[in-house]
Image (cartoon, rainbow, N blue to C red; front, side):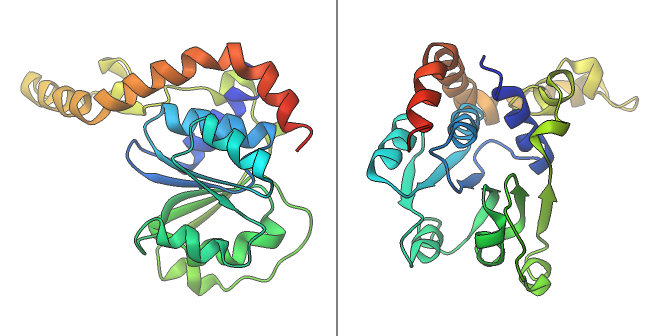
Length: 214
């Protein structure tokens, strides 16, 4: 797995993303964005990415995004919201918060989370846009995410070994029911994860080389 991947996994952990949730990755054609697309898709999320160039949008689609939008279009937030049938996004990974954060908050789903990855200045936001959705703004820096600290199981805590997730009050039946539910919920995500994580190493160098010229 290429070096960018473990810190990107940390973004997912900070956002507490779950399989079947919908994620919007703003600026998905760069090296960080592509890694986010790959890992989000591998973890079973529905992935929408954005890029400003046709070449960038093709790259994002090729790397696993279900839908791709042009973030230079004036109506791209309206189009992004329409892709969720008005529900909004569970997670937004934001590469340019000083431009997009105020609008990001307006297209969050209930309990949605914006993870700020990149920022180049200041922006005025209306906190009520987050309050009305019980939303959260989560900020982090790539430099704070060490490899050891950042990488955990992409499918979440219920797929870790039982002893790490069991309560002292759990009966054997409770554990069995929970494990069965976990297996049902993540069966498809595991299959997709194998397809995508298996290709990360092979495609990483070519992906980053292409992304660097977009």
